[in-house]
Image 1 (tube, rainbow, N blue to C red):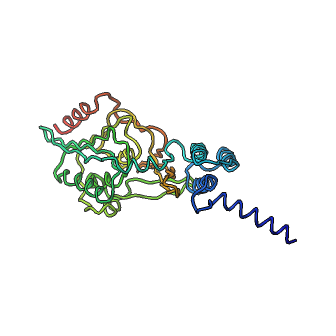
Image 2: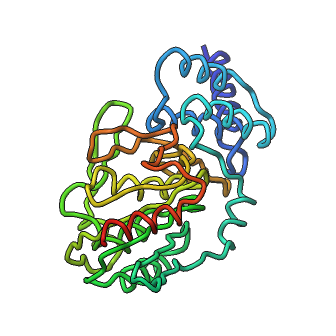
Image 3: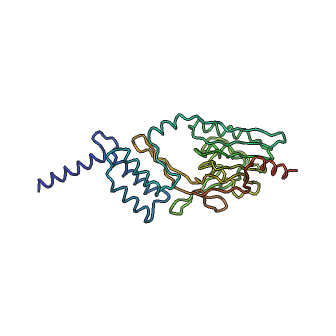
Amino acid sequence: MRPKMFILILVISFVSLLMIGCNGSVTPQRYVHKALAIMDKTALFAEGPLWDEAKKRALSSAPEMMDEAYEIVREALETAGGKHSFLMESSIVQYNDTIQWKMPAIEMTDDSILVITVLEFSGNETQAKQYAQTLQDGISSDARNVILDLRGNTGGNMYPMIAGVNALLPEGIILKFKKRNGRESNLTADYVAKEQGVERKATISPQIAILTDGDTASSGEALLICFRGLSNVRTFGSPTAGYASANRTFDMGDGSKLVITSSCDVARTGEVFCDDPIVPDILTNEPMDAALEWLRISHK
């Protein structure tokens, strides 16, 4: 019995080295297994025959290099997380940390129409509060006509965007997130303002025109959905990118990050959005002109 036990211990030790690495580093096999476990638990589409097959294929692989592991994970992620999920290798993570972000732009037209350009945002906490505060300070309590320009807003952190325009949003639930098991979580403007560290302003109800294009994506689409179903809002432009879903980010231990879609966005109307573009009320190649005309007519 002793020789068999010795061989068994050697086998277990060898497998452990493959998974953990001699110096405690992440090995390719361990990386794949960790990624698959995360997808199984959180990914929006990680269920059913297609996922079972994709998971089986990934777990049966034997990558020897990290590049091989990355490709195996990416292939599985296409099934588990859909088009909004992705893997960022460490070099991309480091590059993203150096990207400069821009403040939102606010201006008033000659006929007192407030034009707010809400740009994508991926900065740190201090910058997020500055971003939100800039938006909030630019919205006066007597504003009667507002244009929210979301064209080119590719997403990032939605909290400073929502917190910054919280005066334009009503009390109650402004957005929901629906997981693959059907469970929903709610988001209110009060909660977002508190989390972002800015004051929740008294709600005002001006006429609001929202501009979108094919680059309005992710958190840009989430902000758009927060206004869905409000009687004082019209949307203009072209359909959005179709990434109206929420992601979770996981550190993978080697400097890379796994970004997984975990839920769909749900509007106050009950509409569920995820991978399909959001079509504006008025399809037009000249959304700014159309929005200005609508606002001017509505307040003649």
